[in-house]
Image (cartoon, rainbow, N blue to C red; front, side):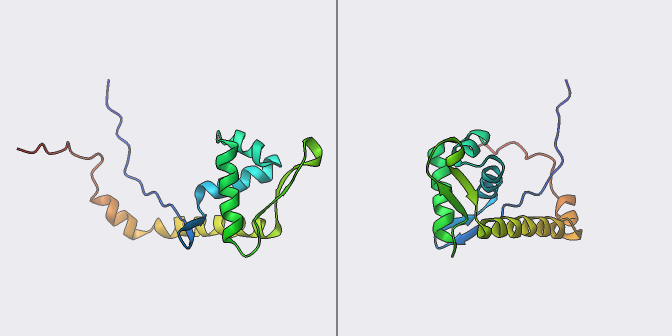
Length: 130
């Protein structure tokens, strides 16, 4: 059976920091998308295969890091409760996604091609100390 070798790729991970806290990154942006789609933190967490506690902690961190909260919650069950993105949350998510797209576009140029031209397909085996 032939060994499948993947082509070298570039993976960029943008994180905005607020002090030592990550105010926005790819996972938090995905969580905001899920909250917008599902209308609650718990449903968003389930959709992302994440614990409710973890999702709540991420939302709390985002809400503490921005001038205005990104997510607004309403206590209750079914139709009376849930969560939604605030206007600041919609704007921050859209701006973050635009930044991601712009960085990805900028990273695909000749500098990346030059780096990838000299990158091995796979790492060589580890050297064993003598």
